Image (tube, rainbow, N blue to C red; front, side, top):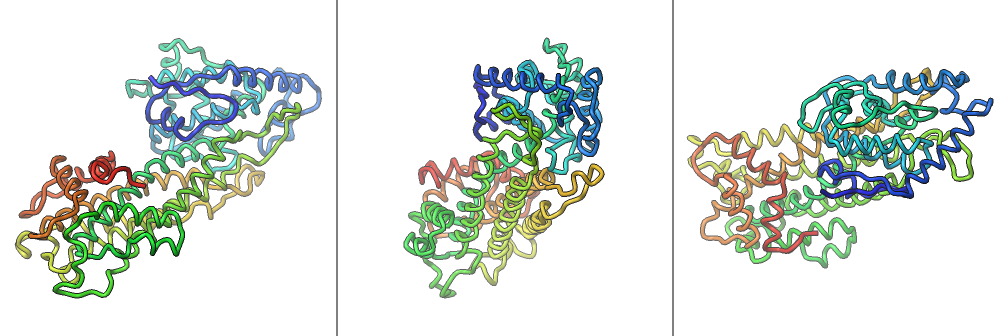
Length: 512
C-alpha cells in the first residue's frame, strides 16, 4: 500500500487524496519527530515558569485570563476536548474525516505546535488502522479552526467517544483502539488546544472538491461539444485565434477541448442549412467563456489550497526562536472565500448546461429534432421530465451559490466576534459538486440521444466513442418511453467515475 511520509514542510494535494480517499498509510519523517521533540522542550520550559502563557498555562478563548495551576493542566486539556466535541446532526463522510485528521497531523508535524511525538504517532496510528472518529455536520464556525469536528477526532485519540472501524461499524473508540493495540493519549500542556485549532476540515474538503471539479470541467467541455453537434452548430467559434485575443487561460483550454472532441464531425457547420443561423445561441457559443472562467477560479482556489497545505495553523504557535505567540492564522477567510467562489462557478456551469439541454428538447429551437427527443411525441413524453430534474438541480445549485463567508455570527462571549463560516462553505460546495455531476449527466444523456436521431450525419469519432461506451454502460438510446431513472443514474455514474473522459481521451488524447 502507498505510504505518505509527513515532514515539517507541509503536504501536497495528492497526499491528501491518497490518505482521504485511497487509504494510504501515514509515516512520520525523522525530521518531523525531531521538530516535535524540540518544540515540546520549549513548551515544557514555559510550563515550568510562574508566568502564565496562553494555551500552556491559561484557559482558552474568553476564559484566557485564568492562570491554571500545574496539577489542573492535564484536566484542562481533557476538558477542552470533551467540551468542544459538541457537534450535532448527521455524520460527515469518512473521506472528510480522514482528510481532516491527516491535515491536523501535518500541522502538528511542523514543529510549531508543541505537541509530543507520541501524540503525533498515535494520530498516524488511527489513520493507518482505518479508525475514523464520528464527526457531525454542525459545530464549526470556521474560526479558531474547525473546533467541534477536530474535537471529535481528538476525543477518539483519548479513547473516548465513537468511531467507525475499518469494517464500517460504529463502536466506542476505546474498543477500537484496544483491538488495534493503540494506547489512548494522555494530553499534557497545550496539546488539547493544538489538536483543535486549525482549518483542516475546510481545507480537506477544498482539496477534494478541486480534484472532483477538475474532472467535471473537462466533462462539461465534452457535453457542451456534444450539444453543439446535436444542434448542428458551428465549431468556428472555437478557433484558437479567437481565444488568443482574450487571453484567459481557462477559456483557451475549454475551447481547445471542445475543438478536439468535435474533430472530424459531420454534424457541425450545418447552421446555414434548412433554418439558417447567423450565430449559435449564447449557451452554445459562449460555452468556453463560462467554463473557462470557472477553470480560472479553480486555479486561484488551487493556489490558496497550496499555501494552506504549506502552512502551520495553530494558536498559539511555537516559533524557531523559542517564543510561543498568539496569532490569528486560524481564521478561515482565505479558504472560505474560494470555497464560495467555486460554488458560484459550479452553479453557472450547471446553469449553462441546463440551457443547452432545454434547447435540445424544444422543437422550435432544436433545428429539426423531435419534441423532447420523443419517439412518438404526444404518446411519448421523451426527456421532458429529465429536464425538470435537471432544472431542479440547477435551482439548488443557485441556492448553494449564496456565499457562506459573507456571514459572521459572534461567539465565545464576543471574544471570537468575527468568524469565517468556512466549514459551512465547504459543506455546501460538496453538495454543489454532487449536483453538478448530475446536471452534466442529463446533458450527456440528452445530447447523445439527439445525435443518434440525426440520421444520415456522422458524429465526430470522439463523440461516437462516448456513445458506444455509454450504451455499453447500460444507458439506452432513442426509443419509446421507459423508466428513465435507471438510465439517468447510469449516466451519472458514467460521468462521476471518469468513464466519460476515458472514452473521449481514447480518441483525442488527454484533454486540458
